[in-house]
Figure (cartoon, helix red, strand yellow):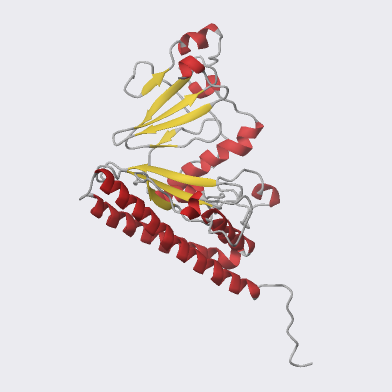
Length: 332
């Protein structure tokens, strides 16, 4: 399709099945490169070209558009004296990258590999890295909702000065419409491999709810969303944005309560996935799809009940946090 139609803008595409994950970067026009992510590694990309050195002799781990090497050579695009660095040839490294993109890549590496040097503006941050531990869904959720936690760049932090705290664009933002972890599991029952962990609202404060992808219906609270908040409409989007707004409004007061709420939900989500997998192992075809659809409805209801209880409790506490209060001195 890219060869025939081209692309008007740079895009990236992920491909995954039980056996492998590939990351493809289209650098506008009709040219692209794809790299296989090693089984024991992870990759991080922001809004910029990420793939680095391309090995054209390694077709097990790289693929590319027809004629891309000739295109680069004919137009003198490779300014490196050695190698063929896709990022150097087609990428950018300007002021926007240094404040909008590379710091997010750096912080993701910082979470998974704390030994990564404190260089959030580096143009040479690695695309692929390895850790000494296995990466969980919760790890990825933490990264996607992060705001340079426990560094001087944290907007909620107390280290550094005001300029530091506003210097870089966080990964988790209030304008994030949805965030998700797409999981393809090689140890799951056939037909139940795919789970989309979907987060609405601020990913910093809202849970990633597990949806089995082999489903043919979605809870109306997810499929029906008004453009503006309407308390008469059952909307997951506005429910989680309400939770996020309340949590942020009294951050120091509510952040631990929010963490406890998320921890409890993720514990339940793991139980739910294990229970659903066990039931799915006995099913196939339409029966499996029906069961997974019902499982999605079930976990949405549980998450909704926990979230509404959390919102109600925070609102009750917020009444006593108002500055419009007065206590008469008993000595008067």
